[in-house]
Length: 477
Image (spheres, rainbow, N blue to C red):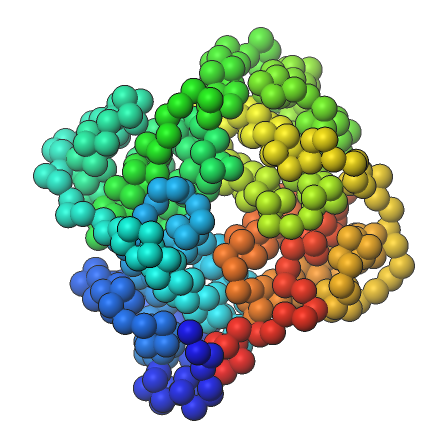
């Protein structure tokens, strides 16, 4: 696609001034946009080229559509138009929508629209790729299964357990009719979280799709959005099914059902146990990770400390194998941790925590086993003082991690570094993993023990656009 000129941007967006496009803080007009409006904008996004789509998004923003409504229409277009099989690759245009929302939430006014424009642009690229690879369309919904929400949730669970596409499609279509407010989502998704982690299809993207779907529907609980979302989600959850992909799942279920001792539940994290989790994950065999973590929990470690250990391990992967693949351990933790928080059943919460260990071991085996050992994240020492912006202009990011740790250890420095990382992604991020990753970093570091959070933030400098990256065309204009 040709980059925009400023004149083209303004003319195609209906001559809306930039000053009118970006002051987003005062927009909130709940319920102003109807389901018909969402579907109409979704149709427009599907039927028109990228330039026209970006111009329409900008124009609607100037007319008062909220970011949730704009992102909801983009999310809806992706669900209707892009194949969820495989769950990843081009389908990231759907799985990045809530990450874009988070980056918009924390943006200064001048950058608040950029994540939305990125999601729209990414959808158009995915749509074009999908057309070359079979031209998927979400077919018309079947006759919805009747019943109460609880009955439909049970039918959905049974359909997923039986790997029955028809049963899931009917149950999902019926359940979507009940999504008229966010309060029903916990009941609806309680049977979906564990299915997002029962197999390791395509590096674990299923749980990311489950979490992103829940969170988008929580922002915009509309049946018109819920129906394609739940139907597409079920298609993704039914991909595969071979035993070879079910890494650790049977063991994690057994350990979650019958812990030998009660866990410490809501106890705070502590660095000692988090470091012990980190050490376990570095060496434990596949299929034994959940058991090792269960034993640590039964010996007194808190779930919060275990999550911190997982986060440290995910950050360490950047030190061993920097690049796109190394973002997946953390983006999966972000999804599985969210799932464990929302799950109503304590057995499911325990399963999600233990299964996350098995997946982290799977990442280690895929990315770093057999390679020379890299830096140990718990052995890092702060380097010399340097400004956050200068850190990001350095070509060799690995060499700047000690300096980033120095910045991140001070609250003001951590805020400055996080702001600089997020701004760089908003303005220069031309690939969905940048957005997914930095949004996950911001959420997860806020949940960590204060002594450990700087390490995650420091390692995140390894995956943002580099010093030679240009602003996207819509950021420039």
